[in-house]
Image 1 (cartoon, protein in one colour):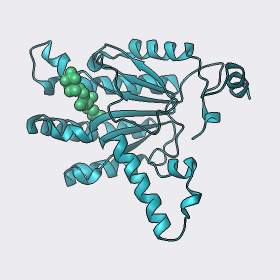
Image 2 (cartoon, protein in one colour):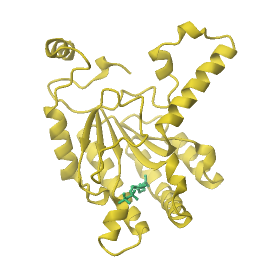
Image 3 (tube, protein in one colour):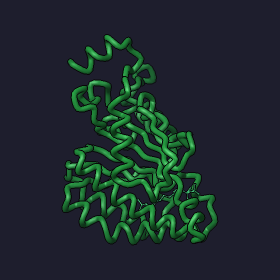
Image 4 (tube, protein in one colour):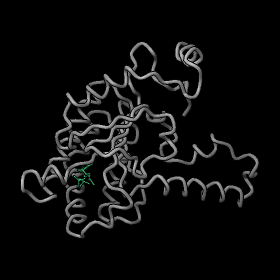
Length: 252
Ligand code: FPP
């Protein structure tokens, strides 16, 4: 993961998109329906988003489906989300595999029921060799959890004598994250009107372009994603450099 991994300046297409899919509950409320109906509509929007990213040649898509904090939601809503995840996995994994998508889950897996954790692992194993696109689904995920795990893994390496503390640098920290083999997200999208990162990919979003839209997630269709891509294409990414340096690096 480094800045030479950024998209080439001619196309200005993100290689990696990360999305907080917010607004399912409000979408349902506006229709006088239970929140679970909003999540079902949200799952359909996930399919549309994956289709669009595949059509656009996006290499990696990371979706925040369930945060570590979402466990605190009412148990009926958590249960409905888990059922939805199970059914979506059963229905979609074969099709994702056929289309060359590598599926990965990031987050604290031990918190999930064994049948769900098993299906996650099965989906990952089936699709592990696919490279058309990587779909990371963040479940039971938090950015602080991710950083804490990386710190623990480094501490373990030091304790095992394979690493000295002074050898710890940004590259070695980055290597401990589950997304270590992908370019950092170029574009972050949050639907639903809030302008927060909400403990998503805290380490990885350091130089990501942030895009916020009031559109509720179930309404986030291909046209809405194209608007975000067009806005990304107009952004001037400098990574802390002067405009001249950044443009030279982009060309090089
Ligand atoms: C946020 O909306 C959304 C969630 C907490 C769940 C996201 C789940 C899906 C999009 C569907 C399932 C996904 C997969 C990968 C199968 P919210 O409930 O916080 O909405 P609100 O802010 O309007 O209340």
